Length: 172
Image (cartoon, rainbow, N blue to C red):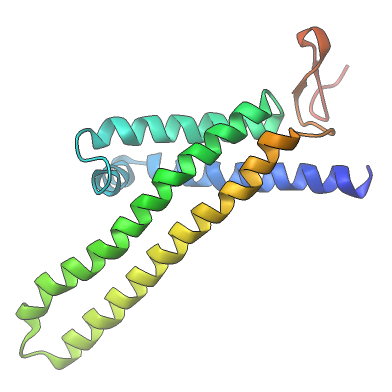
């Protein structure tokens, strides 16, 4: 396998696994699902459950499409579209951290150590969500690269001419 083909395969695998891990983290149990829905509610106020469900479906199908090379351009486009509201959610969570800290701070008026801990936690939460939002916006570039360039061989599982399956995971 030449270096360009290996790089293309590694890029697709890394991007897909990142998305699949995110889907798993949001869907692994009821508590994770509630958290994902509460996060979505910061941006999608009318129907956060529906937004969360659609987001997880789009992310999972896009990731599997890119990973296995089944209509990878469409899958990569779905991933790129998903990343925009995902970034907006992180930026909203950044603002939420400051709002919640302002609500909690008065109850810590006589607790200097508590106020310091709250300040540290707020700063860490705000920075983490800001950088997560930037990461999501940055990941749009490799997703759009796959939209424009398509997935190159080798495929793990690909669709060839006449809808024939081929690839590294297909044994004749």
